[in-house]
Structure formats: structure tokens, C-alpha cells
View 1 (cartoon, rainbow, N blue to C red):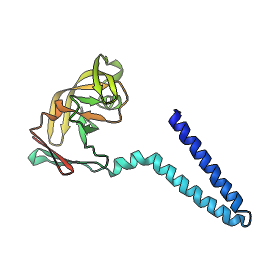
View 2 (view 1 turned 45 degrees about the vertical axis):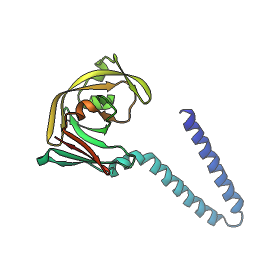
View 3 (view 1 turned 90 degrees about the horizontal axis):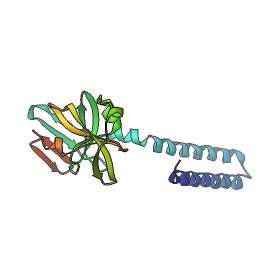
Length: 193
């Protein structure tokens, strides 16, 4: 547990002690009412903790999804609530979620996504370096057999696997430049080939 988590835990314990103290001082006259209020507060705190813990899963479920227009070789990606554009593609047959990143030179896979795509992440040599917003990271160059996005499949796509921790794989310019048009209008990003 890092210092940030420890601080939050201490805060929650102190808050809980204050609430319990209030119930004890207020409940001297009617213990039934005090127990009812304590149960209500326990349910409220339990619900808040559950919502916080499940937020990542909830956000994935309600995130706007891309639309594929196969006959036009067109993909429309809505902007998510956090301002990013998320794109689902099949890499070597495995479905992987990417953040579209025009600031990234390459397709960058997390170790987890690289393993899903059938790459031997333990056998890779991380000898390349890349500069990110969080500093320098080591990467391993790879070639992907295929990336399928809607009706379009590209083969022999260069990519890198990031040795560090990343929350999402990145769809960088080495792949995006294969599309004839990349357009952002309003809250939608459109790829056309």
C-alpha cells in the first residue's frame, strides 16, 4: 500500500470514528432509532465503496462505441467522457482496445495486450527507448501479423511492446497513416480508407 492509499485509509477510519461517535452521543435516548440510522449510513458507505471499486468496469460498459460503415471503409469513433477516442481492433485475431494517439509514433501494446495477441512477452528484448509524457520507457519492436479494423485488415504491421505499465495500448501514427482520411468533427473522429 503506498502513502496515498494509507492517507485515504486513515481519513476513512477517522471519518468512521466521527460518525460512530455522533451516533453514540445522539443515541442515548433511543437506541432503536440510532441503530436504524447506523444501518442506513452503513448501506450508503457500502454502496459508495462498491461504486468506486467497480467504476472501471462501469465506465467500460457505458463508454460510447465505434460505428463501422463497411461498404464505405469508414469508422466513426465517438469521444469518450474523458476526452479520448477509444478504438477496438483485432490484433492477430484478439480483440484489443486502443486509445487513438496521434502523438504516438507507433502502435504501442501493453504487455497484457501483446500476450493476448499471441506474442511471447517474456521472450522479447526491450532494447529500444521511447519518450512519453511520463519519461523514457523501454520498448521491444515487433511485427503484428494483422490488425483488423472493421472491414479493413492490414498485415505485417510494425509495433512496439512497452515494458512499463500502461492502462491502454496506443494506436499511433504508423497505423493511422494507412487511412486516407483522419477527421475530427464535433465529438467524433472519422477514419476513411
